[in-house]
Amino acid sequence: MPDFPSHTIPPGRTAKVCLIDTTATIDNIPFARLLEPPVEGVTRIPILRTYSFFLENSQGRKVLFDLGARKDLQNLAPSVRSMLGTVEWIVKVEKDVLDILQENGYKGTDIEAIVWSHHHWDHIGNVAPFPKSVDLVVGPGFKEAYLPGPSAIDDNPIPASDYMGREMIEVDFNGPRSLKIGRMMAHDYFGDGSFYLLNTPGHSVGHLSAVVRTSTNPDTFVILGADAIHETGELRPSQYLPIPETLNLAHLSNPQQNILCPGHAVHQFQESRGRKPTDALFKPTAGYNMVDVRSTIEMLQEFDWNENYFFIYAHDGSIKGIVEEFPIPLNDWKEKDWGLLTKWRFLEYYVPCLRSIAASA
Image (cartoon, rainbow, N blue to C red; front, side, top):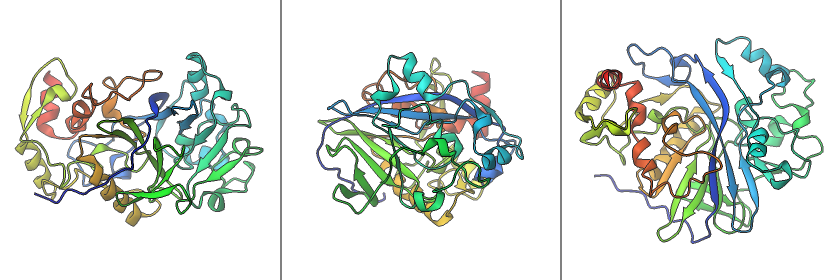
């Protein structure tokens, strides 16, 4: 058995956190663009849903973590429109996050800040309709890499309307509210121990993840992984979280049927692709700095085994249909077994025996 990492987070308050399905989906992405080694019969990754998160601390301060993609795709920065014109992806967006907030009784003026996990178009959304009192929070190096730059400059990925006249705060992971959580640098955003921004470099300059305290006694947390991974199989299995001896397919696509599958079937699948049973199903193939991408994933794996942490990333298709969405909070995720029910759900898309069982269920 491995030595399980310790990662004590200081005592603090909780924050309400809600999952927002931004309505943005990206389909038809070639498998090899993001993942390796290959899987026979799989040429495309599953459709990418895109999530944002609404957070509110005990003092009523409200923050959004990411915004998904904007519904008026024609107003993306020229460089992004040009990129999307060269790929075969199918992008659909029905609503902006502000539309979803307003449908549920919130106003843009209720929000104090929007945290951009990174600069990519499917995360920065449409900030312009929010009042100028809403700050932007970004990761280290963001301003130097992407500002200044009006949208008329073809190679700038961020429309100037997003940030002009608005305060942009770059997180200082060496400042007075900073600490280490596990091996990751963290920043206590509210100063009450409820919401920490995490320095998770690799995918892009200044990439941020976050951890939210969802309950106390015991402390439970949701980790917002953003684009630290694009598929659960980059995170699991691991030396700390091996494949169970028996997989219950009630945790996969058909929760009404209690179908069991032996874990050794996944081990055989791993071995057929040159992977050890405790290796993650996939290695990532895309990122700004691949050394940092791999290091960040390893640091997140050091939390993922712990039953008091629930990991959700921005494009996490395995949670759809199980985890309740905005305005319902995620805070009672452990009591509702959402971590257990979604943990191995991703396998059914890739492992042949699981695909066949799921198809016949």
